[in-house]
Figure 1 (spheres, protein in one colour):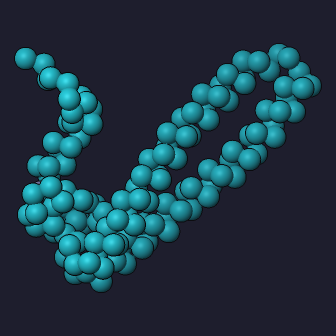
Figure 2 (cartoon, helix red, strand yellow):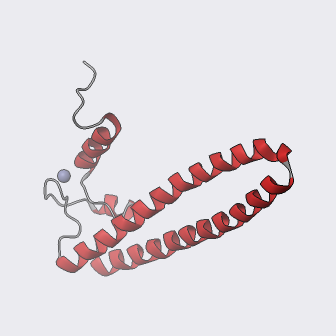
Figure 3 (tube, helix red, strand yellow):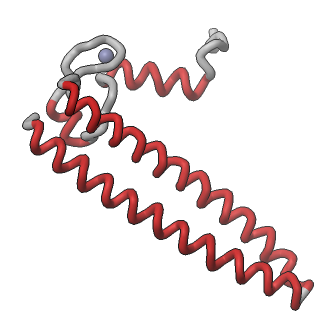
Length: 130
Ligand SMILES: [Zn+2]
């Protein structure tokens, strides 16, 4: 993949994610005020407060993912600078252009990505099912 192209795409993706993150900040500030005034004025909103907590937790997990993706993009940009962009961090092989097209911030080749995800899901130290 053309490195200038990769940098441009990473830059665009970072801008998009930062907008998503900024949108969440607004959302949280608003809902905080609302739930506080509802709590003080009306007890029957108790159920809504539960939903609100649920929504907030869900938002936070989305926000965590956005933060994670932003960190990956920053990381990929550093690798563009130091010349290691486009190679797998685990095995050092070249990551295919197809994969970089789909995921400009990819850190691993397909194989090592699958391994990393499997370990994240099961816990690396736990023995798998027989
Ligand atoms: Zn690899």
